[in-house]
Amino acid sequence: MTRRGWKALGVVTCMMGGTGLPPSAEACSGPVCDSGGSVPTSASAEVPANLPALFIVPPIFQTLDAGSVHLRTAEGADVAATVTPSAHGSAVVVPAAPLVPGAAYRLEGDSPCPYGPGTLGATFTASAPLPLPRATGLLEAGLEQQGTVAVIGGATCSVDTQGSSLRLRFTPAPELVPFLPWVHWTVEVDGKPWATAPHGSLGPTGELADTIRLKYTRDLLWLYTVCEVTPPTAHPQDLGLEPGRHVATLRPVLEHLDPPLPSVEVPFELTCPKKPADPVPDDEGCSQAGGGLTALGLLATLQLWRRRARSASPLSHVPTFQPPVSDEACTDTPRSWPP
Image (cartoon, rainbow, N blue to C red; front, side, top):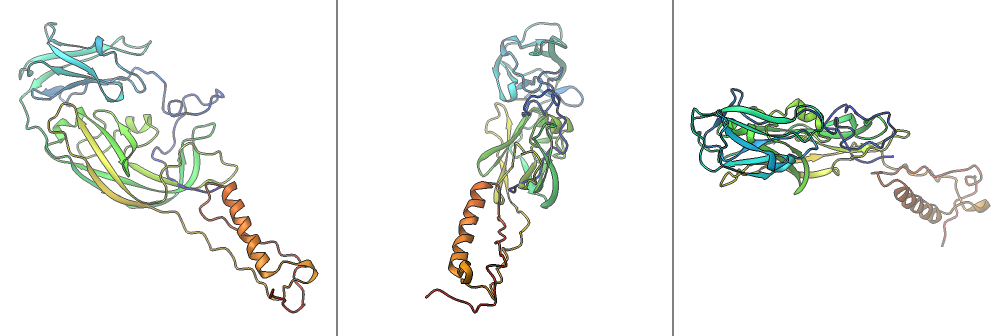
């Protein structure tokens, strides 16, 4: 069985393998609810005083209750702010007044997980205002690679296929780097969603955090197509993109930034190895004698077999046909062509 692919995640650990349950994005990406979740800040636990919005990011596959989120001073006094839901189940917090540089704050909310810490939160300091970013950076397509790759599917959540892939390379604009902890991302291919990543997923050199790579069934910056699946390999759940030319678009979102950050895009191409052409039947010494196939009859049979092969194998790029040639159909009788 053939078609298109390469896998972004490499080997995926299935947290529910062996249970008899069908694999899914959630089943193969980690526990449904864990003790994760965070309040994005800088490495020094600072937040620019002019940041348009703060965030609380819940554990993967969970949604934060916006009504449980509070912004407070270090002394515990509530700070007026608007709280709304955002991407990846997070909560966006927009203070009613700019943060005070040098002041300490705490942002917290109820954890959506039934076990683990009951509260998600962090204490941070408002730093001096920074110039708000207006540029995103540079997006490039790496070299195409072909070979064996693991994709989501099967009882162990990993299926080896043959395919083609490439990695996108993103270089953030210098003005965007200080704001990366508060940016979430989407990659589209030909205008259709391909992969997403929550706030803080990309580092200052454009690298994707390993923790994000393991949680999501598609790597944000990895593009692939499955070219061949050889029986008895289990059928993969995700065949990736169609082989051919495409355009990838990286869309950053820094909530409440006006004007919003521009998207960046790059063209790329994924190909499958060419298969040998169908062999041309050697019809020397073959005739219609003895009830054998005529030349036109053989061509008609070939076309019929090809149509049946395509309908039976929707993943096949180039079906291979080997026409049956028997001793009865090939004799020394001179060739007999239809009038």
